[in-house]
Image (cartoon, rainbow, N blue to C red; front, side, top):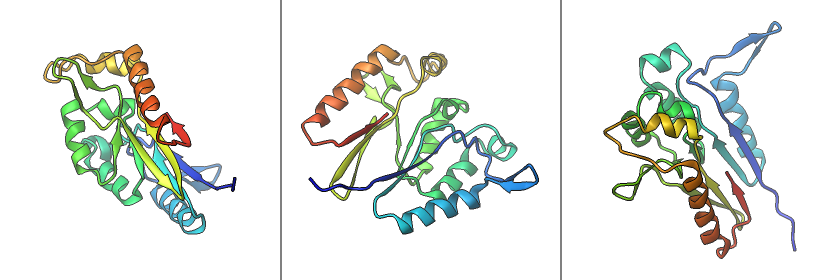
Length: 186
């Protein structure tokens, strides 16, 4: 069996704040550094996946003013291979999140935002990414607290709970177990 190399880059909790900060007299972070690092690794490594684990929104004045649209445009420039819905993605409401998802030029996944009365998922629950013959299955999930808050949106309906989400993850993993999935990222 030959060895294969996979690099997974990840970010989370960006909160719409893409400006660098001074830390101990040194400028750190920011969109330009993150973008430069992702581009550098993608250029130097053969099999790179850049995943964002959520919480893109809510935290900067600009993000709040533009209700996440400015953040989606900046994330489009970062070009993640996959992004999960985080708890702050629902801060502007589920309907607005669905609008922002349409503006994204990258896949946003979630397995537990699910309308039970008409059997409809709000998002693609998972994404299978292949790199050099390696199959990596990404599944997005939210916490019970976020699902509880989302249930208050009457226009959307009711959602499955975390125990049902665990069953859904099991179903997804079982269906891919026969398709030679090499790694599952939850």
